[in-house]
Image 1 (spheres, helix red, strand yellow):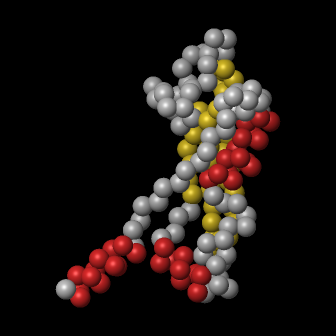
Image 2 (image 1 turned 135 degrees about the vertical axis):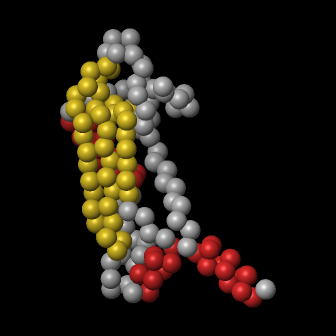
Length: 143
């Protein structure tokens, strides 16, 4: 019985699945851009592909002073670049973020003098919507 409990605890501490949630910008403000991981229905003009990367370290295994999470990458790097290019939004967004399992984070919290490297990369195609095209709405799958 003791061995089974130990095995279950080990399995619980070494999971490798991570879920990140990024709040998309509000669609009500005309100055905001839309963000979608799919295509856009209707006519649009491609303004080019954009990729942004934020690098930093995690202090104590958890503190992120450089903002290398997906939300900071979206709001502080990707969306300003879309606005700079004059786009209405960005489609086919792909993202990659450094992930560490809980035991690794705890180990680096104990070894507080060693920072963990962290990075988030976001990329997609910047588009300007054509006449009659509407930005994709939340909750409606794009095909």
